[in-house]
Image: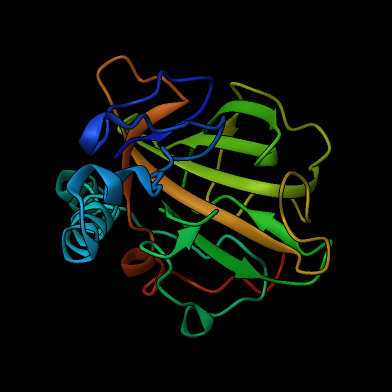
Length: 219
């Protein structure tokens, strides 16, 4: 499944069901009782559900994982240690939609930092992601996605170069985040040949962040 933003067309799912895509989020997997009725009977409906669930498991792009493993990263939230992280890539959101990212809990207003060198590709406000930053790595092959920010860093603008550990903004709950649970939604995706900031193949950030450097002070 591809990490998308900007109104990508819905993709086809088994049994002719369509996936609903939301700006800034991966495709949604939708299951309804129509699948059970199509197959007829409780056992066939159960098998249909299992097949559907398997099809909706997020797949981390192998080439993207290789590229990410070659980058030297720092943690994207000030003062947070890698040991506090949990792998959430295959967790479900909104019922059956794969998360394809990691949520890093922190108090509202905690600084959010660039995990790598590179440049700001896009500053984007979306209904699900709220205030977001798309950050391309120096090779132009990976994009880092920071969502639910409370505000941007002063002077942050599209096209500007970034250094690892540079301030991007602050942890918040913008978009569809729970107001009582401020966090950074952080994702990574491998860019295609056209390097479209809103589209790519999702990469699990957890293994790379487990080896990321802790940042204890702003640059």
